[in-house]
Length: 331
Image: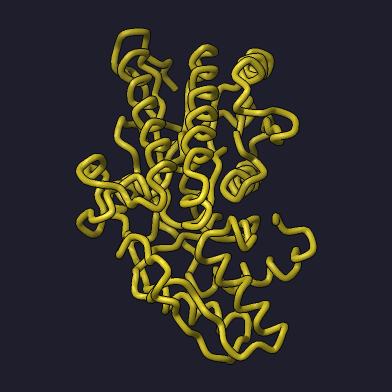
């Protein structure tokens, strides 16, 4: 594999290829939903020098600590999956936290990686970076072409800043760093808490508790009409490794399935998976969020990757994981 470019130049002389399985690779956020899935995939792929630190071991908001960690560990590749995340309720209630925490995490990790001349960086964002009313399916080029969804605009702005920092490093220092923007993710390790969860794990918990408690009716937020795309986190992890080894470019890459369903349809799949046989009602006084969010994944397909886990099978296995780990879930 060719060496990276020099300061002041665009990326040149770099061709993506297999990563060195014996070189140090740091996964920031390795205990979260995405980071833990990436860690599993890396282990399964034969990587022997994986580096991870829990938030209690390394506070990524502490700039001095982050720089010291990079100086000591000297990773050759970094996957930045650490972030403060949450659903509509959490984002609407704590916008300062979602903006400030994520900006500090990103800037500290990216600056420290730059100081160590980290060769390969994958920055992970979210599909919420795109305008609320973007044409569907959403192409990468739609970034910054319209107003954001107000229920999570603070988080989105932080992630957009991360994309621009990746592009700036490429332009100013010639390092082949890349960004990937996943659609809605779900799977083992998700956050199922009532206050902090996203829609799919929230539905799993709500319907399973209703079944367990013998409740006849489940009430969900909104109308159920918004359309959402969901990707199993193990597929996301596989896509991340594929991009590191096959893609190099300044533009962020959408990662998804290219297919969506209404929240009402998703709720029906979840109810069936947990065995809930009651009625579902919809509280239309609560916000729906973005009407539709479907990613155009042609760039990802052109790079040679497609998902493998079917939605119904993925939800079924996630329900099983949830029940097996219900005593130790994040709250």
